[in-house]
Length: 200
Image 1: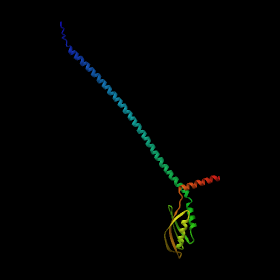
Image 2 (image 1 turned 45 degrees about the horizontal axis):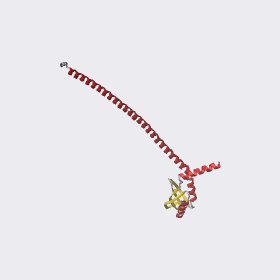
Image 3 (image 1 turned 180 degrees about the vertical axis):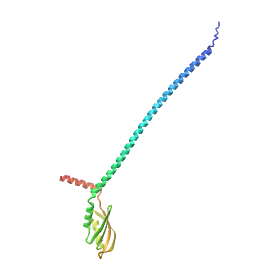
């Protein structure tokens, strides 16, 4: 005998499958949401770390900039101090130069020649004076050329003038002062210190 089930079993199965599908869809949605939140959390953490690293780098860069500025300032101060030191060494090395130049001028001055003025610009001295004759000016120039502290005498002009009712020659000439190099000055100072130490 054939049994016929007249109950709506297909509708029930369909409803059951729909419920399973909806519950599965809900689970997938919840899983996707959780996964999305997890990914977002990971990216947010990575972003925070990167922001922290960027902040750290900015702070370190600011510190380095300050240190670089400090180094520049120290270098400028060092250069200024070295420049002062060079000036002081130059002054110490050349402090007796004026006396030596005047001594040499007096020694090299022939009879009949008188100096009216001497003007120094850098290492050049301009001499203005009177001579009884042109030959005496030539002798003065030869003497200056042979001087240890003066060199390259150059006659600028010579003219005839009347001085105290006498005819004489007024001349203008330039001469270069021979200056020692800073190394030679240091060597002399070192030799002087050694001699002082030996005497002590």
